[in-house]
Image 1 (spheres, rainbow, N blue to C red):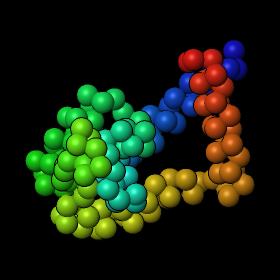
Image 2: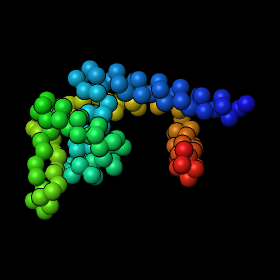
Image 3: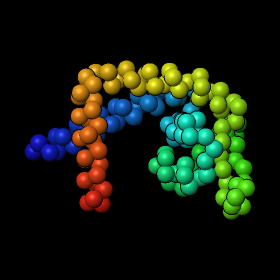
Image 4: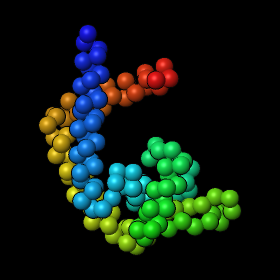
Length: 142
């Protein structure tokens, strides 16, 4: 059955890519979730937890744990929102910003080297196909 072969291939490629990302960020003392949070803050600036949850697509309980880890590592700071005292905002510390400035270009280059196996046209086609599959899966509640 071809559809199962396609699904298996998709999962294997995703797993391989995920492992490459894990290996890459691990050398900087981060896990993928920590890197994702720091990357969002690096590019978007100060964010509240709700907005950050939408960007990095993790659960609230995982987010709380990872935020605590990053605060302990002194990479992010958590402050009470001036607009809504029930809300907290997160931002990179100077150390967090310096780390991201140092590693992001290297990380992007590493990820790019994996994707370079595709032509620009193939990369665009893949992006379109993956969006199409993702939308269909969401439509069916998968």
